[in-house]
Each structure stands twice: as structure tokens, then as C-alpha cells.
Image: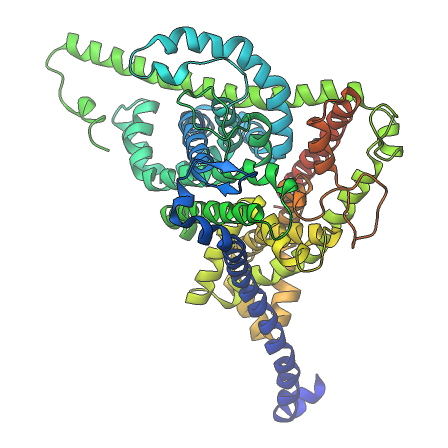
Length: 322
Length: 295
């Protein structure tokens, strides 16, 4: 140091040189890791597409809506599993969003201060439970409850209605599309609720205070101020939940009933892209057309998830900036 | 901001109308509050129901041999030792490989790529990977490592878990680094330190509690992952610490045992489910308390 003071011009280049060796190396490492992430996504797209190419070539675009899946005659179509994936995910959203909204409303406006943290943590822990646990819980606890109580009750009540009655008919197996959607709804509930809570908290307090000052009730403030202010981000949170629901594997595999047919009743068995891949994978040899069909299914799932997740991120961009 | 507030702005024509308006508004408020509290209660009931089911079934099946015996054919008092050890090995290696990569990517995003287009793309892709179905990561590693190298292996499982933990670490690292005030960076640069020293010795050090939280949450996430391991490390009923061979893991063993027709296997699956859930929730709670303690 004394040298540096004595002859600053002589010492500085030495220090700068030492720094200059470390700096480019470190920046290169960081940059390479960033590029690696891009390569990873590219690799996933390419590997799934190349793996699925034989199936796409054999069945053409019809692969997407053909409902046949016959390993014996080697005819494969994605129609049933795409249908099951979309129906379970959308049903799950319909069930989860109102509940998630209630949770977020409670956590931001209703609950007393001392309750918010424990309840918030409890809801977040719901997100941490591994999906296979949801599967076992759904299969051993929820499915029997569904077949004994919930489904017979729904069949007797909603099943009689004209117009939508056909959705709630058929034998109460317990497993099936409806149960899978219910389990999915519970799994995505914490993700949607957490996003909603975060965006509700970002509403400037002065907006809410003005509305309260005008005599609004808590619900009117939520409906008239908070929701309009945050609706884009709320939609983003819902899309995030949808993205999660589309690709969920283990929980769905346990409870969906695994049958390759499209039933009009929601209580019927079905399958999803992820459940078909998980179940059929063990029986498909390397290089077989079936394996290629499964990879093609994976590619389709990737495309759907990518669109949904990209939309979610676009809708949430203002939150990300803030 | 408009429709719902207007009634309260408009001067009431007479007191009776005002009173009934007030009543219906209050009823709406009470109804909405009640439904929201009920929704929260429903969410908590699900969590409690899962935990109660797990503890009830898990403790009934729990005994010492779960931790001391390896998996055996049904009816011969097997345990889960090899599955637990296999899971610990794969999760530890996956974390050890994935964390530094995630740390570097997060550092790149926070320190080098602010406002750059390439950084925006990396951030976007990392966020997509964060929520992408894990089964697709499994299929990817299968075509990358299993098919070309002629078989399922522990290393493939490690690779899949490492890929899953990277975006989690990226997100927390970037978030934590961007909380550090720029004046601190300027002070370090002003002292003549090179940028990499500023990042490693000052920024990382300030951000470390948050980054550790992220890593713990990441470990909790990959410890419960089942789908990607189906296509990579496959599972193994024998004792195996050889990473070039198929390797047992707790989630895969639970999956195959829970779906089996044998009562003692199903009970073992519950015991394993309890072990894994306690580990995952414990890690989550530890991570949260660590972070809130340091903040």
C-alpha cells in the first residue's frame, strides 16, 4: 500500500492486471451458465421433437386428434390424452380459483395480523407436499369418499338436471376425470393464492383508503378497487396454476382411472398426456414406435405448457418489474 | 373503481332507500367475508387431512426395520434403507451440481445482464423451466443420457434433479442480489476492487441467507420428485450405491409399492410417504425461519 501511495502510476497497472484476469473469467462463467439455460430449453425441445418424429411422420397431423391407442397394432393417437389433459386442468382451475381468491382475500384484508403469517405459511406448505403424496392421499382417502358419498349425491341431484345432467351420470367409481381435477385443484390452489396475495398487497394503500373513506365495505373495496387494479396479474396467476395443472403427473396417475376413451360423464375414467407417458413408458422398448409416440406426446405437452406459461409470464410482467 | 362505488356517492332520495341500500351492501359484505373465510378453512382442512392421513397410516407402519432393512419381496419384512440412501445420494449430487450453475446464472442476470435483451431471454427461459412439467425433464434426460449410454443409471437421475433445481436457485439468487443497494457496489468498486471480487466477497456474502433459503426449498422440491426419476434412475430393489447402475429412490419405491396389491408393501409405502413429507416440510420450515431470522 505504501508503495501505491509512493508511486501510484507504477502500482495501479499491476492491480488492474490482476483484476483483469479474474474479471473476464468470472463474467465468462456467468455468461456461459446463462447460455447453458438456453441450451437446456433448446435441448428439451429438440430431443422431444426428434424422438417423436417417427410417430409424427407415421400418423401425420391426425396424431393430435386420433383417439386410437393400440400398442398391439401400433396405432397411436393423442386425442384422448390431450382431451383429458385439457379437461382436468380447466376443471381444476374452475374449482381452485374461487377458493384461492377467498384465501388471498382473507390473507390480505380479513385476517388479523397475527394470523396472516401462520395461515400463509400453511397454505404455502400445501404447495410443498410432493405430488406423489397427493396421489396416495387421493387414491386411498379421497377416491373412496367420492364413490361412497360425493358422486352418488351429485348423480342424484345434478345428474337429473336437463342440459348439463349428462356430465354427472354413470357409475360412481371414485377415480376418474372429476377426482383427478379435484386433486389438481388442491395442488394448484397454493400457487394461485400466493400470486393473488402478492399482487393484492401491491395495491397502493391510498387507493383503498380513499374507497374506505367514501364508506365502502371491505368487499366493495376488493371488488371495486383491488380487483380492477390487479386483474391482469390475477389472470397471470391463474395461467400459472393452469400451467402447473397441465403437466402434473404422479397425483393424476393415481386417481384418473387410466382408460383410453373419451366419456361424456365427468365421473368416467380417462387419462392425461403425463399419465400416459408415466404408465406406458415402462412397456415401450427403445427405438419402438410406441416410445416415439410417447415422446411425441411429451412434445405436445411441452408446446401447450410453453404457451400457457409464456402467457402467464407476459400477464405478470408488471409485477415482475415492480 | 366505478359501478360498485357509485351507490354510495349518489345522494339518497330518502332515508328508507338509504337504509335498505346499506342493508343490502352490508349483507353482500358479510356474505363475501364469510365465503372467503370458508375458502381459507377449506384450504387448511386439506392440509390437515393430508397430514393426519400420513401420520395415522405412516406411524402404524413405522418401525425400526424401515430404516435398517433393504426392500424385499412382499411378506418378508423388508424396509426402505436402500431407497432412502439412494434418494439422499441422488438429491445431494443433484444439488451439488445444480446449485453452482443456478448461482452463476442468477449472478449473470442480476450483475451483468440488467436490461440486456439476452438477459431477458435467459430470465424468460429460466422462469419457463421453473414451472415446466418435470416429467418432460425426465424424458429429455432419458433421450440425452439413458438411450445413448445404454441404460438407466443413477447419474441420469442426478442430472434430471440437477436440471430441476437450477431455475429455483436462479430465481432466488437474482431476487436476493437485486435487493442489494447499488451504493454498496459503488463503494466496493470505488475502493478499486475488480468486479468479480465485488460480487463474490460483497454481493454473495450479503445475499447468502436468501440464497441458502432458495437452495433448501430447491432440495425440498427435488426430494419429492418422482416423474423424472421414472425415466432416468428407474429404481432398484437391491442395495446399490453404484451411480452407473439403476438406482433406488424413495419416491419411486413409494410409487410402485402404493400401487401394488400387497398389504405390507402398501404399509411400507405409507411409512416412506411419512418420511419424505416430514423431510420436505421440515426443510421448508427451516428455510423460512432461517430467512425471516436473518432479515
